[in-house]
Length: 177
Image (cartoon, rainbow, N blue to C red; front, side):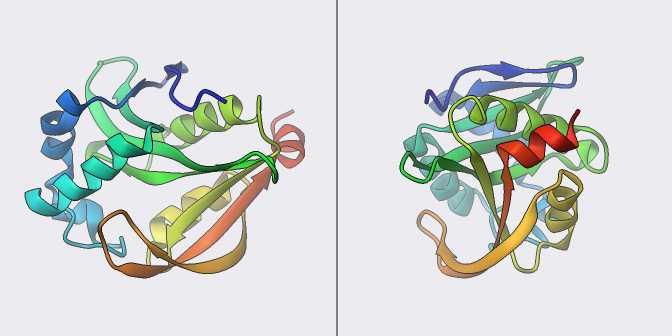
């Protein structure tokens, strides 16, 4: 599976993350309110975001997200933990500018990523911080169900409790007929 193909739908464009995208993304990420429910609440600090960004680049599955209408950078997400044996992949590390919260952008991003992933795997998972109620509700609206909990260490950061959500290709197809 090529986990970094450009993806697009009516609302968002996802382009493979490049090192030159740092300043564009940090301009969004420096807002402390973006991280208030995240397990790593200080990611708005430049030195902390630099570690996060380095992990994103090294993952070779990260995207910068653009508003398809305005071409403005609005966030980032990534694929990781591709497991051929289990036919699964994980989507996560997603964040958006507050100007793009509560609308269609998160759903449009996850839909584009899931549609691409389901061409190759039968299950998509999501790791969401145990205290990130906003993201938990958003992923449940997409039909994902909580299947477990995991202590997870983000790249270069301390281990935190995350909930594991999952949706299968079949459930996604049934839900989106």
